[in-house]
Each structure stands twice: as structure tokens, then as C-alpha cells.
Image (cartoon, rainbow, N blue to C red; front, side):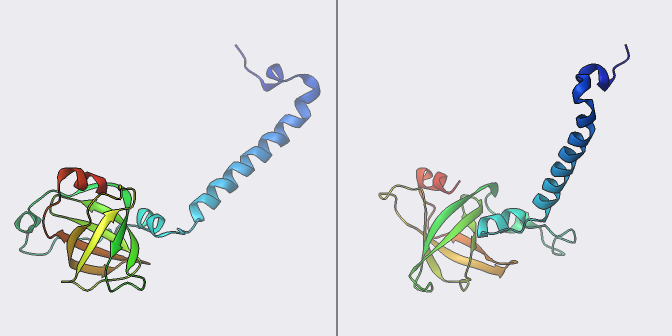
Length: 165
């Protein structure tokens, strides 16, 4: 069976099909190009679109099994409130990047000195949820935010831990 576009379209509309198809392809191509060029606008978008380095190498003579006592879990970023006297208003917003039973990795707009103690709580948590005290173990600047490695002072109850994702 010979399939021809002339058999699918009424003869009076045939001269309009090719230009309409060309315009549609052009619009779709332009849309895909613009989506690919869009810059991240918020902290969470910047974190999600961050490109990983292809030159990463494990430190010589050290395995992560020696240092880490619990398994990290990735997941969707969870917005948290962070309180500390370091912040201008005493509070800041951040996002949990990964989590474990031992601590969290957080993305914040401002850095916090390692060794400092801050309190965190998931933004969507009920008001009755207690604040969790964490110790800043590391703070490094990423492109437009800071990534903090946090250790729980005391591992929170499971229901509170689940609020972080």
C-alpha cells in the first residue's frame, strides 16, 4: 500500500500542509533551544542543574568506608529553615541535598563556619516538630551557594528524620 500525504489531506488544504508543518517544526526547535539555555533562577534550581565534575578522584590512601558510618540517600531537595545567630534575621532558608542517619548535606545562600552549631527544621513540618541541633562539619562554596556538611548532635527520632526526605 502506497501511503501518500495527498491521500490523507483534502485536496483544497494540501498547499497549506507543508508550510504549517515547517512552522510547527521551527517553533518546537526554538522552544527546545530556549529551554536548554535557561539559567537557574533559585537556589534549588541551581543545585539541581549543577554539573558534576568529570575529574573527581578519591583521595589517595583513604576510602570513604573508613570515614562514613551511615549510608547517604539522595532524593528530591527538601526546603528547611535554619536558625543561627550568624544569619541577618536569625533564620535562613536552605535545601537538603542528601541525608543519612548521621547527618545532612545542605545548600544555603550563606556560609557557616565549621564547628558552629545550628538548628534546622523542615519547612513543611508541623509547628509541634522539634528543632534539630546539628554541627557544621564542612562548608564549601559551590557556584552560587554554599554546601554544608552537617552532623546531628543527637540522631533525631525516625518521624522527624523522615521530614528531611
